[in-house]
Picture (cartoon, rainbow, N blue to C red):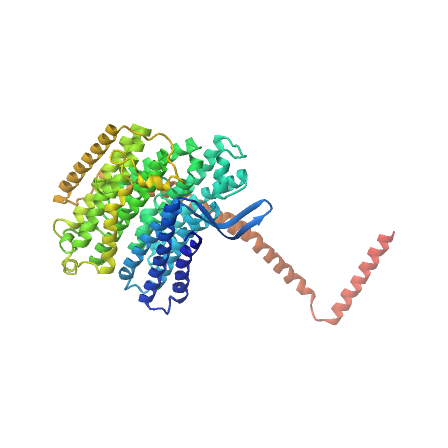
Length: 627
C-alpha cells in the first residue's frame, strides 16, 4: 500500500477538478457525492497505509519525480510515509469525510454547493500534501495551499462584506507567519544544503555540518513564526475567531483536524531540530501557555456559539504548543488527535443547532433545545465532557498527559495551565447549559420550527461522539498501563525530549486535583446559567466580551498608521512624484509639439525662405568649423 500513497492526494484533486470545472451545470447532489467519494477513497488507501506502517514500523520515502535540480541543489517531489504522516492521513481523511457527508445536507439549499465541494476537496488535497511531503518545500506548497483554500472557504458567501473582510484578515495574517517559515527554510538550505527531512535531520544528529546552538535556535524560531500564523498563537491568533464567517462545516474542517494543526505537525516533524534549540522550545512553551490562558478567558464572555468554540480552539492549540515546548512531542500529537474528534463534533453540533434555529447563533436566544434535539444534545454533551477532561473521555487522557509533562517541567507553568483547563470546563458547560437546558428564549417562530437535523448531519455527530469517548484509550497514563500504544507507534519518528517521568503517587494526585476542580467548575457553570441574566457587562466582564480589545489595539498601532502612511505615499510619492514626472514628460512633449507644428504653414514661399536660412546656417557653421 505504501507505493500507492500518491493516490491519497490524487482522489481529492480529481474531485476538485470535476466539481471545479462543472460547478455551473452539475446537479448539487452530484457535486456532494463526488466530493464525498473522493475523500472516502483517500481514507480507504490511508487506512491500508496506516496498518502497513503499524505492522512494519518502517519509514519510507516514495519518490515520484525530480522537482528542482540546479547544481548541487536537488529537491525531489517525494512523499514521506511513516508513523507520523500515516496518523495525520487518517485524521484528515477520516474527519474530512464525515464533514463532507455532513455538508451534503447542511449546504443543500445553497446555490454554490458544487463550488463549495470543489473548495473542500482542494483544501483536503493541500493538507495531504502538507503532511506527506518528504521535504520542507513540498510541505510549504501544501502550507500555502491550505492558506488559499481557507481564504476561499471563509469568504465563501462573498456578497457579505464582513465575510470577505474576515477572509482577507485570515489571508494576510497567515502571510506574516509564512514569511517566517520561508526564512527558516532558506536558513536550512543555506547552512545544510538540503530541505529533505532525512538529510537535514541526519546532519543534525552528528553529521558533517556543525552549527552553533544560536543558529539552531534562529531556524527553529523562524519555523515557529510560521506555526504561530497557521495555528493561531499570540500575536497572530485574531484571524481564527473571525474565520467563523464561513459555513459551519468549514469551521469544523479548519479548526478541528486540518489547517490549524499544521503548525503542530511541522514542529513535531522537526523535533530533532527543536531538541537542539532550548531557547526556541522555551519560547514555544511560553507562547502556547499565554495563548491558552488568553483565549480561554475571552471565551468565558462570548455569546456567539461559534465564537466560543473558536476561542476554545485557540486555547486548545495553546495547550498543544505548551506540550511541544516542554518537549512532550507525542503528547501534543495525541491531543491533536483527540481534539480533532471532540472539536469537530462540537462544531458540527453547533451547525445542527444553527440549522434548527434558522441561522441564529446567539446563545442568549436559545435554551431548552435538548428537548427537541436529543441526538445533537447528547453528542454535544459528550464533546463538552471530553474537552473538559472528565475521566473516561478522550480529552482526559491527552490533557492529563500535557498537564503532567508541564508539571515535570515547571510547577508554576502547570498551575497556570490548570487554570486555563478550569476555564475551559466553565465556558464549555456554560455554552451547553445555555443552549440545551432551561427554557427556550428565542422567538415563537423559531420555537415552532425547532427540529432534529437529518441523518446526514446526525450520523457524523454520532461517529465523532463515539471517537470522543474511545479515542483516548490508545494513550493510557503510566499509572494505569505501562504500555502507551500511541507513544510506541510514534517512537520511530517522534520521541519526547526531556524528563517527564513522575512518581505514580504524584500522577494520581495531579489527576485527582484536576478532575475534582473541573467538576467544581461544571457545577459553577450550572449555577451561573440556572437563571441567566444577560444584563450589560461591566468591568472585567466587558473587557472579556470585547476580547481584551486586542483587535482595537492592532487597529490603533498597526492598521491606522499603515493606512496613514499608505495615504501619504499615494498622495506625495505616487501622484505628485511618479505620476507628476510621467505626466510632466507627456505635457512637455505635447507643449513642444504644439510649438513645432507652427513651422508647418503650408505656404511654399515660407518653405523656400526656411530652406535658404538653413543653407546659410550650414554654410556658416562649416566655414567656421574648417577654420
